[in-house]
Image: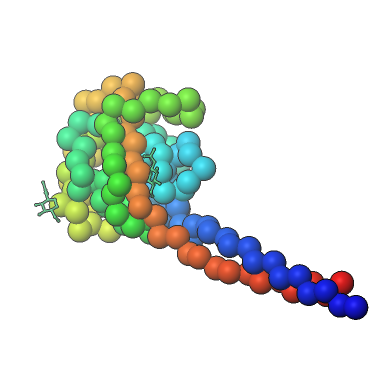
Length: 142
Ligand SMILES: *[C@@H]1O[C@H](CO)[C@@H](O)[C@H](O)[C@H]1NC(C)=O
Ligand SMILES: *[C@@H]1O[C@H](CO)[C@@H](O)[C@H](O)[C@H]1NC(C)=O
């Protein structure tokens, strides 16, 4: 006698969440299990820092989401604080994106380390994500 057992497992996972340019600058959303949601951290000249909230806009958030392959902006918050450890370096502030830039650092800002924001407010972005759905079917013969 043979039993056929069909197992269908739906796997939803993400294919994104990191972004780096050739000069070693990086951007990441930290602190959540979803790589398309979290505090905006940037890496430049060997150091991670946060971004300042002054002048932060929907368009800045759009550049973050797009550059990570994370789709469009669901929401953002410029007065955000969570328990995920942050380096108190505010690396870039008063960032003004038009929305079409490839990377956050292609937007206008006064310069790395030129800041007015305090390190107490963090910038949070939640993106729609672009999830890939794949179906695995295993057939077990008993
Ligand atoms: C934000 O993006 C929209 C759509 O791309 C654009 O029309 C608008 O001018 C941008 N705003 C600023 C302040 O750059
Ligand atoms: C973030 O966006 C996702 C959709 O991509 C949504 O399911 C989730 O609830 C949002 N998280 C928060 C905290 O709003």
